[in-house]
Image (cartoon, rainbow, N blue to C red):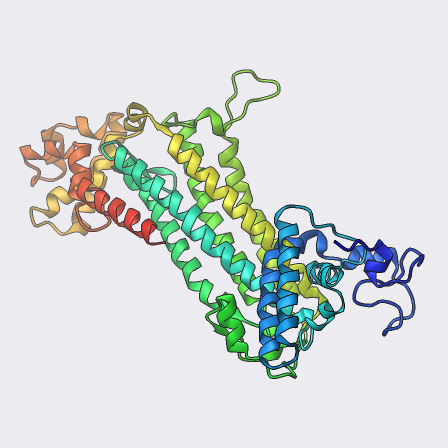
Length: 479
């Protein structure tokens, strides 16, 4: 293996002073002066875009084949380039690739190493290609792969675990709230499946944005297209894209797909935040117990068991929104086509993917190890939650709901004034409010009956909740 000194590998003359211009822009080209070392650090992206090493090499292999097809290089040179790129890939995969001064980004690093391995032929690879279409290609490949992985592994697993957990605990009843005030009895599983429903929409949205990301910009050049007539549809097929970018200017500077993922991550993490908040409140009420694996203690108070995993899930959503807004703000004033501002897309993108995967894994673990406390969940139920059922009782006797709503409200008020529970009101007391109450009204005060009456699609009846669970599992398997 050829081993060049760092200055030689940079393209800078041997013994060049610190700040000598290296990499693509060595002495004798457009620039005659060196680069400020601070500028080198400010300008580089290899510290973070090296994550795309595999996508970059795959793009280069496809491009070598494309320029061979139009006779820019010979078959032998194409073979040599692919062999060299394969060796570079092996170095990355075995963690033996050495980043050197002058490796400004993943593209220059790979090309520098390729040239070290195979010699001057490596310099032919970039014919007609710009780092502008190269980085756009790498980023799209990386993003689509990350999105598909999140769907197939992380989201599918959470949905499946959540649905199975709901099925296991389908007989547990709990309090339903609006405005954080007691509302109606529901099934504990119905509550959990409400969060799974939101996450299913998130999965559908992620499916929707993948085709817009999976478009090939390779062959767009710096901005004006490729001067050698490369077959862009061939490139798209080689790399697994669904099609090609229709305009070379747009192809090099379009980062809509990054913004879409950041916005998607914001909404998905918002839904996880809502799940976390509900569980924090339930944990406070002792309705559920968070497993020790997802809790921490206090440095001062020995008794504390804090739901830190849930609090962090809640906190991550705000940071996600900041990433989406930040990149969108960076894009809003950019002229066509590529500008260096676009380098700032990768850090929030990489951070968003990492955060999404971590949060989905944590949420899955929390649910899988969660222990509901049926007695405490039932304790949160109160007869006033059946006031609507009391109104419905009269509806079934032909009384208009608007009238029964007021009648039931009067019963609630009477119980409050007498400082008793509404279910202890006697038939005589109820009939003083409305004579149409009969003896069978006392059957209203049954939480299970109330829950089972909601048997329409999406309701709290056991059969309805079981259908939600089955549909969720089927959907998760389809991802």
